[in-house]
Image 1 (tube, rainbow, N blue to C red):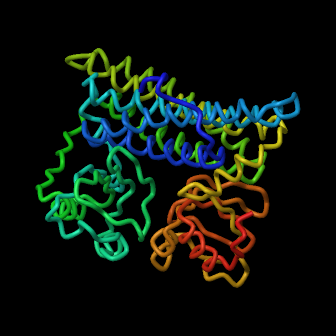
Image 2: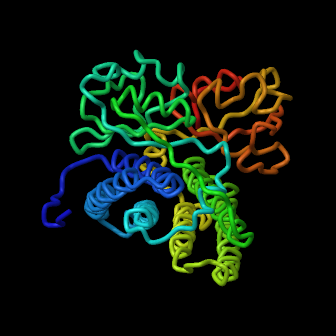
Length: 401
């Protein structure tokens, strides 16, 4: 992108921030998937999105600079610039992760061997003209219900459609990103592209220290992603408690990175080619940057600076919303686990990222075995339609304030 080609355009700051949020979250997802699945195609999409983020960043800064007319404006808008800067850091870190694959920097084979079985496959494909999905909406195709495979993004003529919904129609030559179980993804990929998808075979794990380092990387990834989600939640709900949790998670990521470096150095003496560990170290550093960016997102809340209304509005208007819903005493969820009766995520499409007990205790990254009780506040993430379904389950209103 040539900076000389970028000109100021009157545009809603809310829309820009919402698109930056959606783009940053997709970048995190795609960059890690490109490494964990060894996919140069997905890695190339990361670099395309990173360039789009650069354009969004410049336009957001232009709009914010024009909006600041006095010291009071500057004080209010400073945290907004922090949000823009944090999204930029996430994009840069995602690009560094993708380059591990594109530049073949070196990654131990044990990385993919250590992946949890529950990790879903992500593939990139182009819609063939003769595909049975070409010209049909996702709702009409009923792909996710019938196969469990969902389209998480579409690139059409260079433009991205993030978080496509039931009304989104697939067209020939659309580039689609599919996520789901490996068996179903293979079938859907062939129907969409007309080509056979051959999943990579994970190698057997080898060195103990290296296995521990790789497991730590996966943990760092999960913690840093949770930190970003909670940081946006902290801004949306002006929650100092959530912002403090983000700060704790950032410290945890730093600690894991130190342990990983020690394990990798010990393993280097038993690896035939120690340069194969370079990618692992670059992945750890980029993950730390994402965690730092999450902390930067929530810093204004920790400092007692009220977030500018446009930030909260952007979070609310993004493709994936973050909601806080209280479990009512008569809710079918009260007294049950999040995984019972099919599970909250399966039944509603919402991912519960945290639970706050009435005592003030937080449960971060709750799993299917986590119990929900009356009075618990669920912090969850998903589409607006999914949020409405979750509201029905917990017996809460739909104000999402």
